[in-house]
Image (cartoon, rainbow, N blue to C red; front, side, top):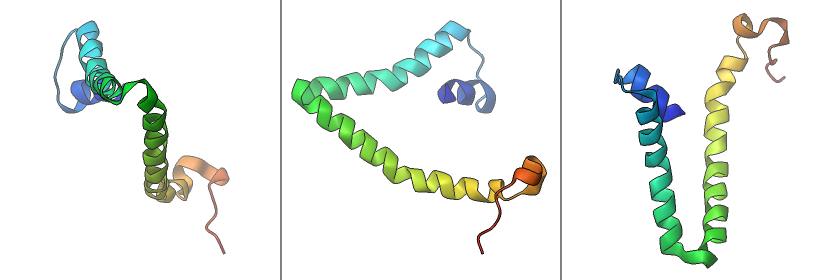
Length: 85
């Protein structure tokens, strides 16, 4: 989905919706299928665990960048997160 938004909005590339979906999903799926074929049936579980470890290591960066937005009172009104202390 993010790839579709980037293609259409940021890069200003206009293509038929079915072709755009096919291209962006192929970009995501083809490398995964190739890695699964190379790792074999026994390696798929290890690849899944490795992917979860990598994703969990990136989570603090996403939270850190979103933190200033959550402390602004304009988009959240009176339900905004209060600063600690």
